[in-house]
Length: 264
Ligand SMILES: [Zn+2]
Image 1: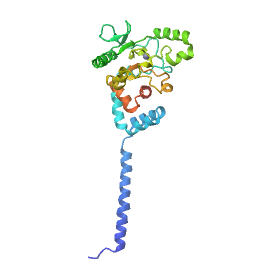
Image 2: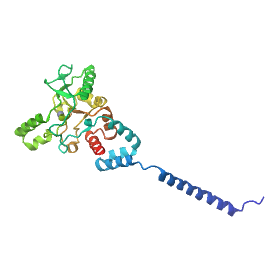
Image 3: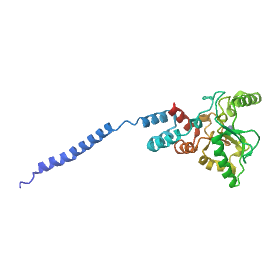
Image 4: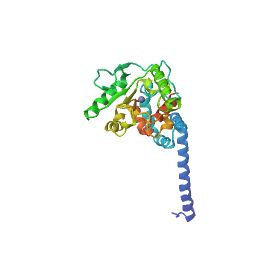
């Protein structure tokens, strides 16, 4: 048998290397073209890029498949738990918070009678307070559901006392208060002396397990439009609270903004 000449071997080697790599590349291109366009991922990415800080965008884009699954779980919850209520997203005077439950006679500490909460929120709160009490903690509800009319009176009272500019840093104009949702609780003294107490530390560590999250964290005043309120927690469901922790640096406002855009 005639041995292959050196040239033949060289040509064969060149063909194998380049020919094979061309084929692989072509196959890849072909496969990508056949793959259906992931419109969901594109939509999520475009909302993230337009609304969220860089680190949150990166976290979402790098974990798109798990993000989509977690987002689906949040979307399966009732949408009212994710409504934005702030100075640029006002609730109407007749916003319906759903079934309200009285906090009186339910075995939880309250600073006044007659307070109410939305039913699902109340049940989550009750469990959270029972568990915290087992650990010897003393959490008291100081404010819960506040209707539009109440907020009108409160806001006007603060304006008469402090002026509008100062009032706007700590009190919501009518329609802009999360309390109108019926899913928000203020604890204990409603002062930042609450921060650093055993109760506050326990909430920071555990509230998400019951579906609650801090609405106005320290250092995000420009984002939320409100001063830091270490005592003000909103029920966003357990899947919502996890979603917020996992992709939004635990900043409720960013999660709500994302969900609002995604829904609309
Ligand atoms: Zn509050």
